Image 1 (cartoon, rainbow, N blue to C red):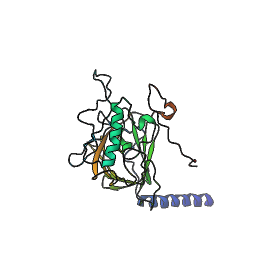
Image 2 (image 1 turned 60 degrees about the vertical axis):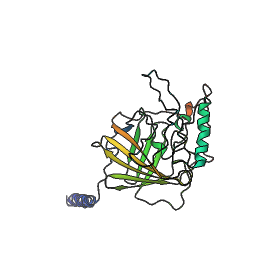
Image 3 (image 1 turned 180 degrees about the vertical axis):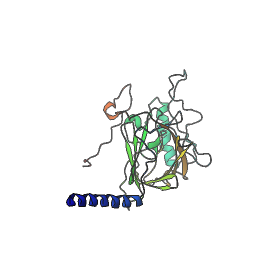
Image 4 (image 1 turned 90 degrees about the vertical axis):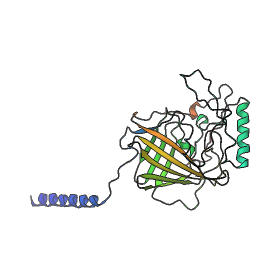
Length: 282
C-alpha cells in the first residue's frame, strides 16, 4: 500500500511539474491551417496573373494591342494566349529582347511555355500563380511552413525564425526564411536559379533575384493576401510589386492532380523535357 501510494504521489508530482513547465511555454496555434479542411483558392478569375499594386511599378501584363482572353466555357469569345507588353518600364533590354522572341512564337501559332502546363517547377514568386479551380495548402509548424500546390504536389519550405545560410545553393524555389511582424508573415527568398520565369508571360530573371512576400489576412480572415516585392538588378530596371489573393475554403482533402505522368505531346504541343536530378536526394 505504501509503495503504491508513493508511486501515485510521484506520478502526481511529475504531472504537476510537467504542467508547470508547459504552462510557461507558448502554445503554437496554426494560422493558415487551423483545421484539416481549411485550404485556399485564388479569388480572382485569372489566378495565373498577378494583381498589380495600387501605386508604383508592377508586373509585366499583356500587350494592350493583343489582350489576353482566358478560356471560359460559358463564353463564345475565342480565348487567346498571353502576349507580353514589351513596353513595360521594368524590363532590362536583354529581357525585353528574349521576351520578344517568345511573343513572335505566339504570333507564329506556337503554344507558349507555361511552367504548370509543362510540369516544370513554377519557381518563386510564380509559385503563387494558380487557376481558381486548384487549391493551395499552408501547413503550419513551429519551425517551418510548408506551402503545397495541388497540381503535381509541388511545395515550398519556409523556415521560421532563422537567418539565411551563408551561400545557399541555387534551386528552383530558392531558400525561404520567415518571421512574423505582428499579424503579417514576412517571407524572404534568395538562392534562386535562373531556370524559371517570374510569371506566365515568360519574363526571365537572374540568380540575383530577391523576393520578399508579406502574407496577411483581410476581410475578417476570409481572404489571404500576399504582397510580393521583386528585386533583380540583373533583369529589371527597378524593384516592383505584385499581389495575389486567396479565399478561405473548406473543400475537403486535397485531390491528387498528377502532371508528369500525363505530359503528352498532342496536336503539336511542345512538351519540354521534365527536369530530372542527376543524383538522388537520399
